[in-house]
Length: 206
Image 1 (tube, helix red, strand yellow):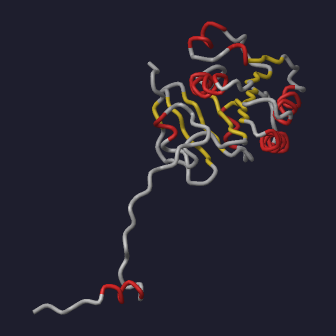
Image 2: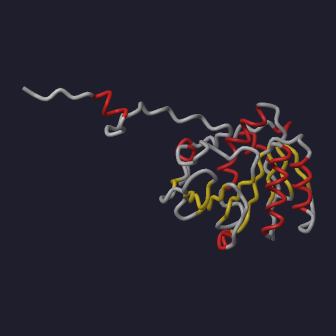
Image 3: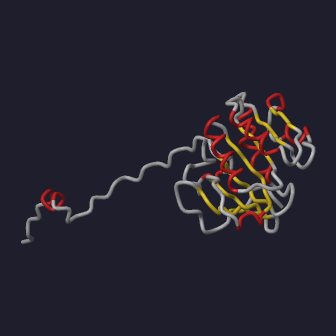
């Protein structure tokens, strides 16, 4: 006859581990619109009210493909999206095809030395849902000002920079490298968890 085990006693003595039902992953406050990417980010999407850095293999190599789902969602909610000194003239039909409401899209022309200042003022204003900038040069201090401005204005900030900047430290809550060949995203840094070890294939790219 088997021995009688006092299960409650063992639990109280912490000699038996009690499993818990797995909880569903909470939806991110600012989903990227790319399920594979959201599933790998600790916050389930873009870090809210924070700076995200997109490190590009080359100008215009895919940052819009990454951002369009989020920008379409934000403008559909009547959130203002500001482009500060983009390297190329935005092609309106492509933005419309991506679902972005052009009535909530604003472009600001600025000299290279003033682009970061303009982006910071837009973020601090509290009237923007997202601000995108393409600074040619940005040191740690300038990026930290963007981070603080995003927190102040409760907006998403995106700084698109060359991949060479990955060698320098950054206060950004999220850093994603965008590769062209192969077309993939590499999460280099993410607030609230470890960056995923493997790259993420860009959906819909050839």
